[in-house]
Amino acid sequence: MATTRQMLEQPQSPFIQRTISINGSPMVDDREEELSRSALALYKEKEDEIERRKMEVRDRVQKKLGLAEEATRRLAEIREELEALTDPMRKEVSAIRKRVDAINRELKPLGQSCQRKEREFKEAVEAYNEKNKEKAIFVSKLVELVTESEKLRMTKLDELSKSIDVSLR
Image (tube, rainbow, N blue to C red; front, side, top):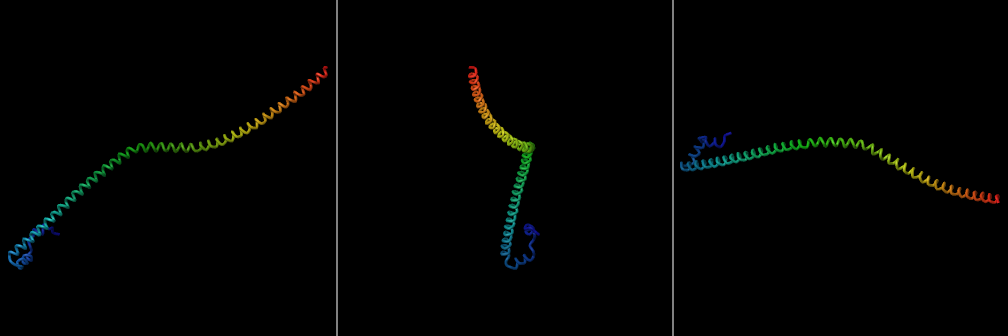
């Protein structure tokens, strides 16, 4: 396909020349020719302006793409640095979490054992308290019986003593 510049530089075809000469006087022909040259020149200027703007836009787009690529590269570097910073922490955190999980697994049976022993302890304390109450009841009965027994023995001794006194007299 021929560009506008090539079309302008090509000599006019005989058909166009004949049309100009048939239509009228050489002055009109010169005028028409001048008008068509100015129209072609105007068209060429507009094409050049469009081409110039297209190149400017292309340059701006290339510049923006370059900036975007640079920003992407910088972000990738920053991401790598962040990963390098967090990587040691991740390892430490992972190790600590594993240790915590292991301790939790050890604590579970210990907690269950502790709860079982607490229940046993409570039951033992209750049994101890019941036996202590029972002991207190029996001790108080024993004290009563001993006191009563002593009273009876004292009364018997008094009676014996009176009876000895009466018999010795």
